[in-house]
View 1 (spheres, helix red, strand yellow):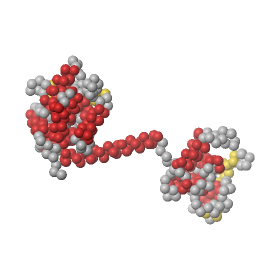
View 2 (cartoon, one colour):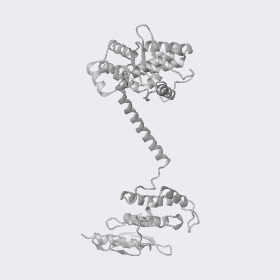
View 3 (tube, one colour):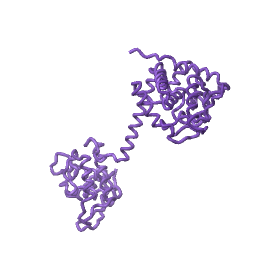
Length: 416
């Protein structure tokens, strides 16, 4: 196999005039073509004393320096099957020469000594030290080319195991923010997995203990805020999402005799009320039975005494004047769990999992559970289409009555 490598390399002579040189214009074997190109490149810089059998003699150095690394990389990117990449050789050659200006402090430095601090100092010098030709520091575009070339060389050295990591890979503020978001998401996922692992362990005592604690607090101090705390936790144990609890308004609650129910048709997304839920038909009705009926009835009475607005929210801030904020809800619930009950924290949303687990424990069928908690899954939709929609609330009322009895029984604490 014979090659004909005909690529032009533009270099500058001593007078600063650009010269075009034809690289390897004769037919050669691949090995001869690569050898010829390398030989031509190595004559550009007097750093290298000779080139013999493909092995460069670099002034007797026993350690790899940044000079050698850059020149190695220049040769690697400039030669491909005996040819020069378009524009690459010229740009990278000038970048190498500029990077190795003695004023910048990288010349002769061992690659192992290139640290993020060294890189920062080098970048600062690039932006401050004037060039000999213009008397001004390098422009941003040229600095960018130099940084890219050095980063490529150090990345290649990292990939081949010459250095353990690329010191140029110092994270930008944007990278740090992305990394923090990733860490936060991973931490949240770990917390959620830990919660799910605790569901069965807490099922027979945690809801009961929490109900008992909040009821006792309200009886000892019957303030509006203590009842608000009791009510929103109670509704979390009926399968409502926290956003649905916060989105309840007075006109969504029916307390007519025999028709007591909550209508879930709006949620708080962030701090904005949105008329949509994850429920199949964007709305669902949950019958109110004990203990929820008494708790909700008392909360409605307190809110109606405080406002004449029938569309007012069922829950307000601790001072009774503002919106019941999610952060307030989360902070207060964490305080109840960690400080009052001295337990490991699990989110308020985990109560929804406890509710489903309890309903399953009470042998409630999946259709009824879906109706109560508003699941929206293709399998449940298919099941409901096949078996039909419940026309009356008898199964739901029976299940919720059992759930109320279960959550208000004496807690069964685990034996230590």
